[in-house]
Image 1 (cartoon, rainbow, N blue to C red):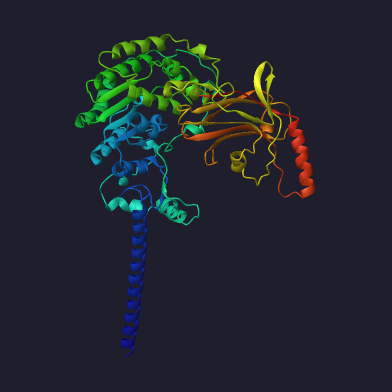
Image 2: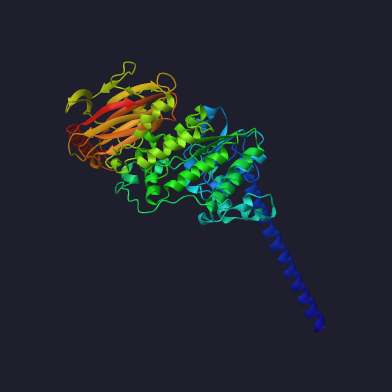
Length: 562
């Protein structure tokens, strides 16, 4: 009897264990299936389908995880691809210039193979693809054909293949589940939420994070040491180059003869040419460029461009953040140049082009660049090139008859022999005031003018002006706003008085992406009064700050629209 009871008891325990195990597995499986379903539904990396932009907001920000899905599932007929040399391109500009619908899928630091693999993916999945714009980085001329940038981290190859079993690394990825999917679902609950997707214009764009000019590129100056003996291209290197170009550049073009491939050599700065001279690599690099050009030119659907003979740009370091990386306005110009055929190499002109290139960079006075002006406002370099890009003539706002310039508590003066606008009065708004409203309803103090970016000022994209304070007061600030027709601030520049000296400084606002009617206000603002102070002290301090700021004044001059 005792043994029977023991057996029954053990049986019940085993049954309970089986039930709990079954429940645990069922629950775990249900959780896994729920998470997987949510990842599939949201699909932040576009691995399974197009983004559901009517339900979620998608941030395009992860090149090696999202580009493959973009190329497989988005609707487009043109693409921009390459390394960081292509990250500053705007697809909206390409669409306007080429009359297409483009996507941008750059791979920072990518090899020729990585980039070519993704062009092939795009062509396999999109029969409408007709235009490919790609940079051929000159620093990668000597790569092996199968070189991949493993030093940049692990490639998410599970996103690239058609194997459904390794997708577990996608839908059970902690970072993807919590940092992407959960966040995107949670964001829907916010009152201000609007579904959609971020733009390709801003995708991977690094322009805003850097400064440009000779003081940044060559802070210690430019010097030539010629310390290394010149090297020539070896037969082994020629073999590697031939294999790399064949497999990663020309083969794909031959397989897709109805696609136009716009390829360009990355236009590095004069500092890069100085560097290869110092290393004794000048001859080898030019021999490689000639050899590669001769390998590519017979393929008629590859339109090969070189801008190295735009020496006015190459030698102006205001266009560069380092030896190689050019600013976004150079990307804009290159799109126009490629569309217009400027810099296009052919079997008839390439030898003369390369001879000019060799002559210029081998005889250039590199050390003569020391002392080159470094623009205080980086975008001034863009402003000076805007006429070539758009045809828009620069306009001096204060002298332009079609611009209605209004002054309030400001006056035209001659200061140190130059025309200027002196702003004496300060804004009287407190921290709680709506800055948009006081500008929109003409409650400004300073200079105000309006213009239409689509009509009278079509093609203009940069507002340049100089500002200068008149004393050492620590109160107040320079305030410049650009407001659209709805009263929204679309560009601004604010500088506190304590951050300014009494020198004349240049500022440039980038308005190249703004359209429609806009209003510009330039003025000087007072230091706001802290809201926690009592009324009497508040009024006293406000009066003191206002009077003290009025004694200083602020000058604006050279207000020009490029």
